[in-house]
Image 1 (cartoon, rainbow, N blue to C red):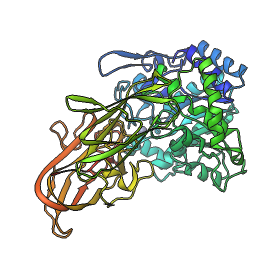
Image 2 (cartoon, helix red, strand yellow):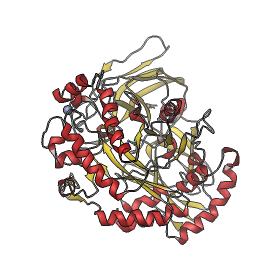
Image 3 (cartoon, rainbow, N blue to C red):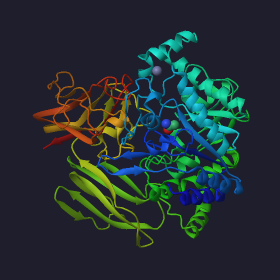
Image 4 (cartoon, protein in one colour):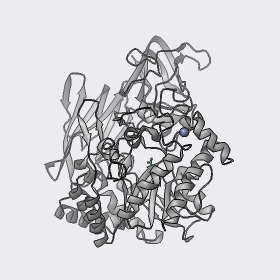
Length: 581
Ligand code: ACM
Ligand code: ZN
């Protein structure tokens, strides 16, 4: 992000009464702050080679940072820098390989996720390095608090590093989690000696919360609760409401407005310092940031500056009209406040078809609607006025206009009219809070998961098997069955180890076997590649059936080559498509 873009962001924050900018300055994929003592942090660590061979990077000079901090102070905004440790440190390790346990030469990575090479906790030189970096950071940032990250630090390297193991023994620690706590404590005392306080992501609770640390709760609200129970302070930014890099399908304006930063029972404890909205930018270059932050930050601001009893969604929604005029005047390229179309699907009278309804979720919306199947596109007129039927598989493509002006890219909704849609479902697995994927009926609701695993259609579990039974309304001749999976190794999402499709006339005697056919580009579930996408598995049936079963086995923990090795992998699926005649 250009320095001018950062200043503009600060203006917009101030206009929305935000008073802290938490500036995430170091990551695996780039070190973004100049440090005199360690020039390679920026000459090497600020640059990466992308998969296509191009170079990407940059960093802020000390002068630019001083200017930005002063600019923010003039607008009553404190800038809190984040210097990530011990994880998310691959860029620093690329610059100075002696910072890691293995000392291996590693590149600044261009893919996203969690990496297992982190700062070595056994070498004193790691701490001398971090202290030198932090001294320069303290000089630039007068804030009372310094954020030291602490999230997503795999312990595999520490577990096999003789230096880290020696440290565990010498300090009388029990395991690598306590070693992380010891690590953070060293940094916390260093900061305290310089009159500053430490903030860390909620993982800093693991192995014991260091004295004086403030917890930023991001994996839900529990981290904040635990911190307050220990008499410490917390900042709330759970992924469920506060992650503005997530699509509007999973966090819309109303959801943000429903955020309650003080969990029940902790109201008035004085320990919840505030809330934060997170705008991670790995998938949002500068040009896209406005569309993710706005209008959602408007709701967040009202939530953070009002008491629960004062909040009223309907009143806020009316006042949003004024906000849009203000945002227009400031040339903010805001995004949607919700998915602009309410799509509803229901059973049609005939199998292989579903009934689709389109409603305007936002005033003034209209547009052209197309039903797109392989090789053809058919326009659906009056789509916004009356429900219509679709047959077979395709995508509903909606080219939107707002007040008759075309807006944004077309919205695509993959759909499948099939014989299993809206038939009663029994699930073997429990719905996951974060990925309920349409709920109880979600795996047979005519809506297919898209290329975005957070689209609300995908149903997922972590470390568990998934399964379901579908009862057709009548005995049918079933031609084939299929299921889609999402594969995205950077997000720990793998295809299943094996799957079983079964069919039966009476619900007791079943046909169909386990098959190990979860191949992706000809390789097995754990083949190492960087592919992201949707995988489909289909079986021919050609038999009469009334009951259908599907099961998928979780492939187990992330494999050894993976940076989340030994941590539970995710399974994502949607939907069980039944083709019958
Ligand atoms: C985080 O989102 N990893 C704090
Ligand atoms: Zn080590």
